[in-house]
Length: 251
View 1 (cartoon, helix red, strand yellow):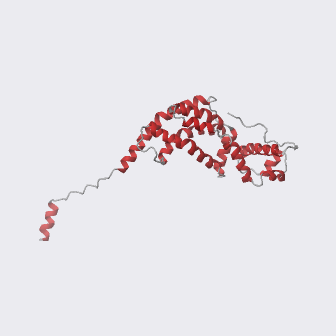
View 2 (spheres, rainbow, N blue to C red):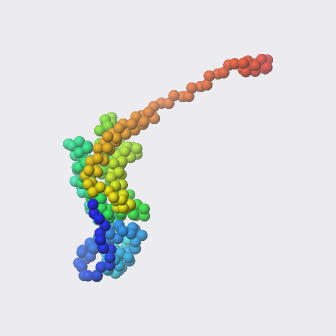
View 3 (spheres, rainbow, N blue to C red):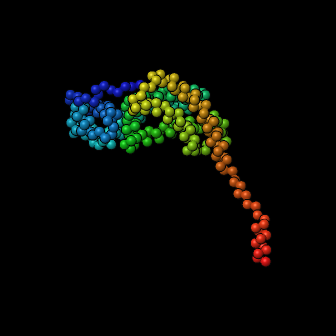
């Protein structure tokens, strides 16, 4: 876990830096700035807190969008480790072991003040960071997991069929649970356990007890909905006194 940086946003004395160092300072300051105030914060305020002029900031990032794009790369893309995917896809190990290994590495990497708050602020403001990152997670984590859940559930008759929206929701379940733990800590300020490994292991065990069953139930429901429906039974023709009375009256 990474706590909020202390005094990182206080105004700094202007000092001469190499362009690369100045750019890194701006990016680090922007990460802390957006994590604290969200994306309504202006670049003039950021420049003031960094101790540089707005024009100097403009030299490195001519638009706010350009700076946000760099923040996305810094906080999300550059922290993603390709070996995490290899752990998840290692078919020589049981799925439970793979999920535990993956999330024991992944969760501490995102359980950070800046990562979580920028993620939430971006989603609320619609700047694109959240959706782009969730698309990445769905492609690299959730979809492979969905196919693995099919296999564990014994649903191997159509292994290459695209995952349905309902299957994806089942696969998203545990990931969403662990992400919400981080949101509780860094957005709502709630106390959460420090031992993330124990949390991960318990979540994986619960997930694998329920998710394959849910996959099988979903398939049964789907197959049942495709069965030909019997036409409704026609009502039996009533023959009684009223009918005879009408025939006598008409005669």
